[in-house]
Amino acid sequence: MKKLIEIDKCKVDIVDKEKVDSVRRKMKSGETIKLISETFKVLGDPTRVKIVFALSQEELCVCDIVNLLAATKSAVSHQLRVLRNMRIVKYRKSGKMVYYSLDDEHIKNLFDEGLRHVEEEL
Image (cartoon, rainbow, N blue to C red; front, side, top):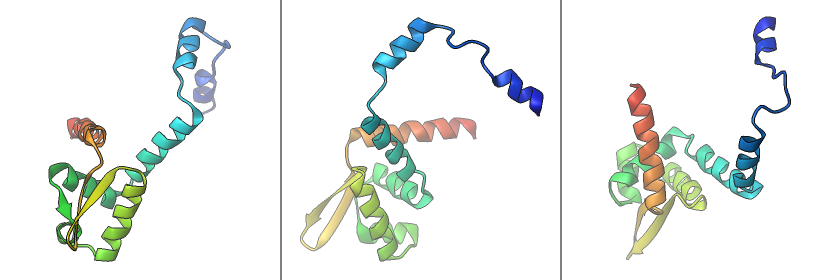
């Protein structure tokens, strides 16, 4: 094990200063990095992923999501609130009904790309 650790250690401070400087100029702010990290963290929950998948297919009311996931209304509402707070889903009211959909095309594209990535491995 000790040899593996030694192999991974860099023997120089920098290999390609131009590449490092180029990436450094393009590096996003700490706030942006934090938000993208939180977005991926929110998508790290299987129940939320099921909800996002469902909403990537159709706009659905809370009752339909509850039925689809065979979960309690309170559990689904909690997960929808988390997703809404991260701007992953949005809602609209129609009378007493509340319908959810993905917030925008960026979320759909992000989810679809992630899905394609994992399905290629299956």
